[in-house]
Image (cartoon, rainbow, N blue to C red; front, top):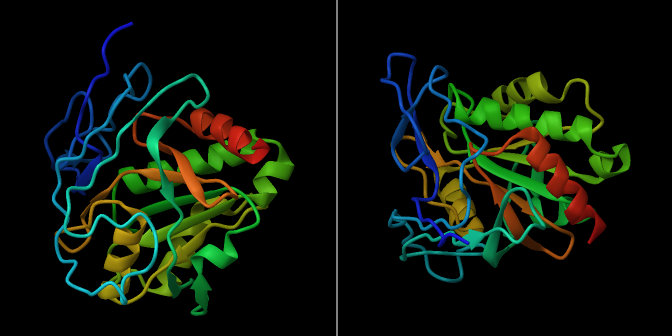
Length: 252
């Protein structure tokens, strides 16, 4: 068996279509456009190691939400594959974060409480992102059409903006409605103050977004009802991968 391979944890700087082409595996600060989606299948997903130092977390312990907080440290996502998941199995499960943000109706949304009933998919991005965000949401929609309807009905999909200045509740609602219109599961869009968004990312254990939210984590985390994420996905994964792992997690 070949030795595990390493690559930076996926994080993207979303750009317009004038960006140059990018070939191969997505890496931190890769320039992404809708013409340059990385190849999805056949990518070895044996181990990931982040190279991004999280910055901007100056709040004290009392102010930080609970979760997989990498405050002041290098964010790391290490994992492999043992045949259970089609995504990347995390070597150390990520604890489900606790935070409360504002949903697309303008109401407070307690992430932990409102997503406790079934599997939860969590992603950080922004609505003006031309590639990674819409393709990830589209993959989730494909997955929810493929899984058993009972699993889909119990699944929560949460999109937290990294660009709260532009992504108002109304903007998030309109954006996510493009993906869930024919689904029983409604995608939840969340926004808040910049500090609240930053703390939510740190609590989830993803790299803190930079450049007004345009450089952000590309990890899609899947939590079970036990409050832990054992698997994550990136641009190398497909809707079928997500569907497979949703069924696995729902059965646990």
